[in-house]
Image (cartoon, rainbow, N blue to C red; front, side, top):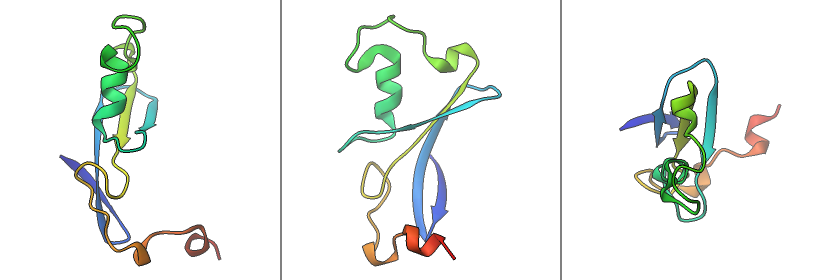
Length: 88
């Protein structure tokens, strides 16, 4: 599984497709990185074949797990990034 680190916490992510442009997807409440891909492939709330998946159209898709979702741990909430910590 692909991952990146932010504030000492390992976040898991997945990609699909290749291309010069990347769509970044976020899952819904209680979801995981699989949710956007499942929806786009017709396994979600819409009928299969209604639209072609962006990955098959030459685009790159990426999705990541929020803290405490999927394989990404919640971590210590006191160490979360905040807007205040990102400004000078």
